[in-house]
Image 1 (cartoon, rainbow, N blue to C red):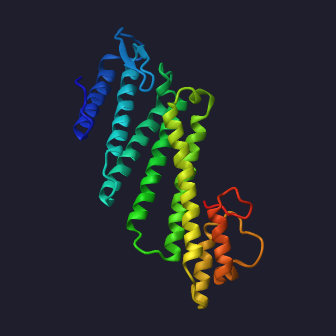
Image 2 (cartoon, rainbow, N blue to C red):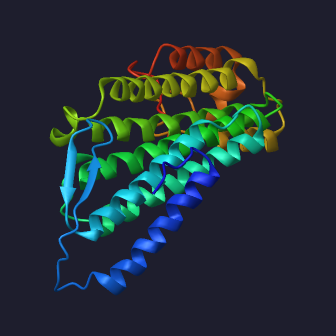
Image 3 (cartoon, rainbow, N blue to C red):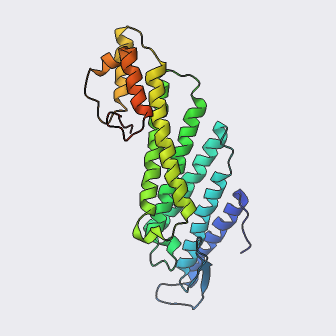
Length: 269
């Protein structure tokens, strides 16, 4: 099999080969026989060679490369446009699907990159990149700076932070800690902290930059929108009173900007 290019043509080549392996497995590799054919692959992160005589190893390795190719295609998309973001989301979702299928259907991996722990980490990493793309699309399509719009941006940023934090925790597991490249682990941690900061920034912007009218309907709508982002409401005046009082909103916004470890700061989820 020739080396696949990093585009749709390369994916089609890998898929064609994978389909051929499926039919070979059905016709020439019965479960009770071993034909002695050796399949050689190299770990995607360490380069350590692996060899097995099972055709399942060849199929699993090809499927892993299909997922890896989707990640490269997703990363190469121009994400300054909605169409480019959608293409990136599609590629990362397909990569997650390939890795998750391997995790659920492939066992006895001779290399660490195809172990259950590694595949779980890769699935979560793909999901995190999808969530980041969703945030970028919301940012791109949000043209106004209305109170509700800023809160939605805060929520989306917090979601990205949460999924990257989950990836980071997965990378710190005993089997993965010394295997995942330091640059990967560092970038995931930076992204988690970055988007957590963005969530507090947008929440503060909603509080400090937008005054509400005295109309009861708008007050109720704003309070309802704001409560959707609370994990725990702070002690003190009722939220409706805080949102109506410019000075109280400014104080609550300042707590957001001071960081999530501040006692009176609320968390977005």
